[in-house]
Image (cartoon, rainbow, N blue to C red):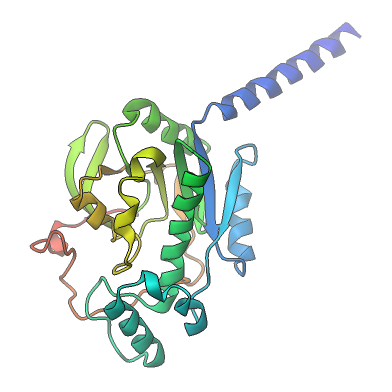
Length: 267
């Protein structure tokens, strides 16, 4: 009888310790997805630690003109007209890398909803995952917390995935960036980002590359490669649908002399 009691006490202690360990994270998690993408959403949740709360953001589906038109007043007029033009005539090529199709509008506005919720909820730090992230190891959550513990308030954002970026310099354990593209997960210092969120609008770039405008205004934006702990599910077609453009060597408006030779690639 006493041995059974000891086992019960050990189990209770382990459960309590595990719960305490989870609750020490200083950030809140969000998942950005579409209501129609249940399969992608479920696949993400399969690998996410269920003991860590996560709030789902259903981004708007703007792959139709009707869906995109709701956000016309938040988009640069030239870019909006070009997005419509390319929608009606798929043979038209994007002028350069900054131009986007109407599907990308929903992605952009989904990330804007992330900021709104963070501000409304009075959060201190927050992490957003897009729904094609696969968490390989629970160490990911700890690594994110380590950045907060190390930097405190001395950062605005830190990305954990990208396909490409223009590095600025090494700053402690993180790489400071001048430009970044094709990102799926990042951490924000919510209070600090209140100063910079206004520079997202009007939309005249993809959401990830738009961060160069914030950087030009002084935002400290970093990159930490987390491929040991997460990966991207590329078994599905992109909900945005990237395609070629007319200036293949053009990278960045705020770094006009940069070319693909200056780019550092992610995963």
